[in-house]
Image (cartoon, rainbow, N blue to C red):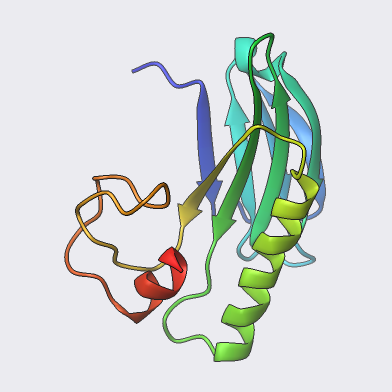
Length: 145
C-alpha cells in the first residue's frame, strides 16, 4: 500500500515537533502528558511540499502544503469522546475554526481524523464523502453543520 499522507490520532508524545521516522516525516502536536495528541505523517515526496505547520492543541494540528499546481491545507483532529462535557466539545470546534483561519489563503482544505461521530453513507455537499457508516447521530449532524 502506498501512502502519501497519513493522519495520526493518540500520538501520545509530549511537545510539538517535526521528526524523521525512517524515510517519512512526522509533524505532531501534544500537550504536557502522554495522552491524546495528533500528527500527520508524510512520505518523502510529499514532505518536500510541506511549508509551514501549526500545533493548535493536543487535538488539532494543521499543515500547509504547496505543490506546483495546488495549495493544500490539512487539518488533523482527534475529537473528544461522547462522554466528554459539551464545553470540551465546543472548545474542540473552536480549535478547528482557528486551524481554518491559519489556512485562509489555501485553495483546498482537508479536515480529517477521528471525530467520534456517525455520518450518512452518502455524499452531503462538500462536507462528507460517500464513505460514512451507519445512520447519523447528534454529533454527526453538528459536524456536518
